[in-house]
Image (cartoon, rainbow, N blue to C red):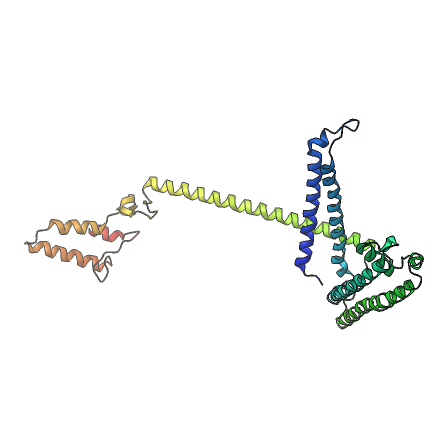
Length: 338
């Protein structure tokens, strides 16, 4: 069995040969002697080169056609019996190559003998090539024994009988035996493989129903994809709208001074927030101002600072470490004390 690469080489060879043949014809047409050729001229015009090129293009076509026909063996795998036949031929190629060489040597020997015996008076054995062709055609059953007997009445019988025994009865049957052994081996190999049961053929009605179901499935898939695209567009539009609203809200808060640069809320005192008892007072700022104004030498200022700290601690304005809490809504009683 040929590997996949061999079939690919044949495909590329077929393509290349087809283009080569086309190129040869284009070159033939573009030659000035062909374009300016006048069939009614009385002068001799040398046209051997163009017409040789044109004839060789048909040889390339014949080779490409042979490769194209040989590619049919690639599709023998689709049918079991054809696959067995192809595998048998490929399996016996090695033995057939050796046997063919031996057969050619035998025919060449008989051709040289026939040329020496009949070549002086018979045209069919006048040269080595003509003698080889005559003996090869004899294997296929086409020969002229009367012409051989006319040249050599006794030698023709001896030559013909020996040739038929050694070449036809022995070598040709060996050729068939090699193919037969290969066919038996391949058949046994395929017999051990499990056969896949072929599915029953579908009726025309079943095929039509399958076609309708496939068309409906394709339409359903297309509608689902359209719905998905529409949902994606709606989600994208909603996200864009949310981003616009968020940008407008952030810009409005920045204009009112309620949102800083980083987007955090500003302190209540900076916002100008008022409580139930009046405007909001930042006690930490007032405490810092009082401590900055009192002199270090006066004890009464220190006492007042301690009273203020005690009052703040009593009302829960500071933590255990002395730092003041920032509250959203200050107590009204604390504001009256201040």
